[in-house]
Length: 233
Image 1 (cartoon, one colour):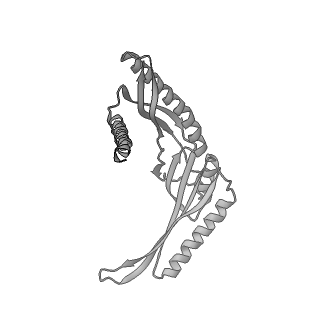
Image 2: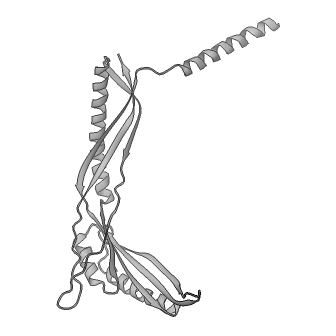
Image 3: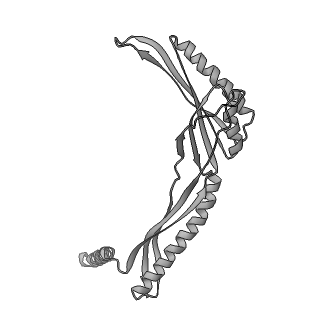
């Protein structure tokens, strides 16, 4: 009875050993490849950060002054706000004490920000000249999500085509007739928002700020493809 139960156990052990040997067997005829494509495009998104600073001996008075300036700017901006074209949001709002050499509080200083961004470049440029309670702190440009997704689809197709052509060429040079994909990764770069200091604003005869001069410039979208292929006969 014991001998009858021993045979299946030995057979199972043999199968496990064979499976472990197969898993540990070295993979052959595999080549690692990488390809990329880059397209330069004109940016279509403008971002402007406006800010103001207030100082005083009383925290409540400084905070009230910041709020008044921000409320006035928001009211002006909301007149022309359009989703996706001119979007408006508040930025940082900070209030902190100022100390003397002996460590006592001598006053308070605060800053408030308003961020205006969108694809309506002329509209945003005009708006910055109409807001009088805040001044321009930073200007940035980038690709809108819609533009970036459209360009990424085109660049991804180009990068994949280059990857496939490189795989076919390597297979031929190594004496194989073709290849199969094993593992492929496709990644895109995330364009960084370009930021610059605010330009000096010219004053008109009436004393009002002129429209913001804007040149968005160009950016690039890159798609990288990398992975491994199995060369086949």
